Length: 109
Image 1 (cartoon, helix red, strand yellow):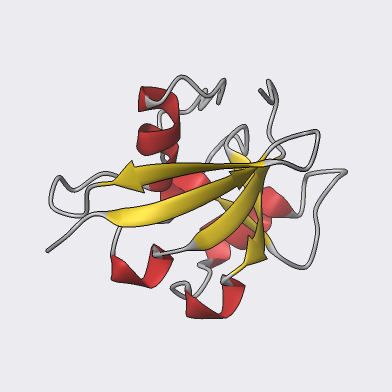
Image 2 (image 1 turned 90 degrees about the vertical axis):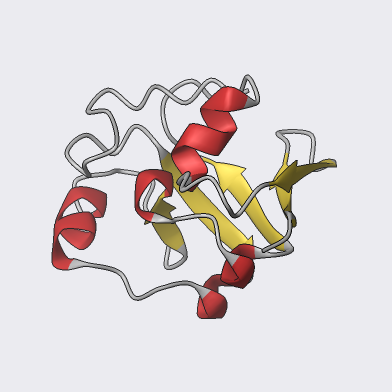
């Protein structure tokens, strides 16, 4: 496996591109936290808090199917979009290569 590129749309609409390893078993939430993004992840990544909420600006159709647990948590959010996901439920793999996302959970950088 090789590294993938994750593009983060900042609040000023600029993009930050990060290289992410696909061979460490990380999810997107862990990767963002490890790169100093202020993702609260209060529940530790088990889809119970939605503080790792992201919007997939580009590449949404390439992601794994959303689970019922994730959908239930997303439905509690006031700022949900039709491309919302919980970053803790997205494992780093080749399907995420070149996605563009915005962090919507509490504590956006």
